[in-house]
Image (cartoon, rainbow, N blue to C red; front, side, top):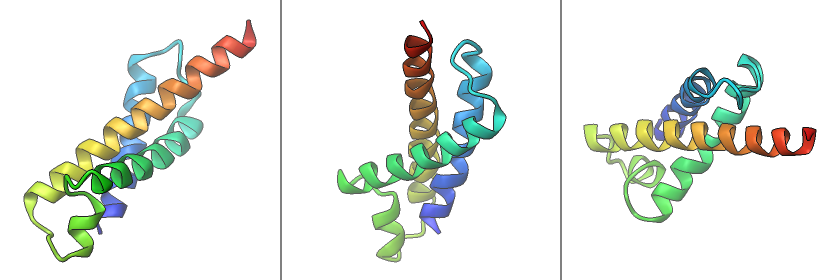
Length: 94
């Protein structure tokens, strides 16, 4: 369940970052895909650091803290990956 939350939050984070950073936006579809991938990666990194995320959900820790952690890590991871890809694509276009 935590992974699904991270993936959805990642898609939302990717689109939110695309809306805020118009020059890095890749369009709604690619922003969503990058957000989903970034959200999954962000959730995994957070769980490896022991700060909740997917590991807490797998251990049966479905509390509000782990849900909020998944939302934050997914959203930040999704937005970050979308921004990184946007910067790389802009640099390659020059």
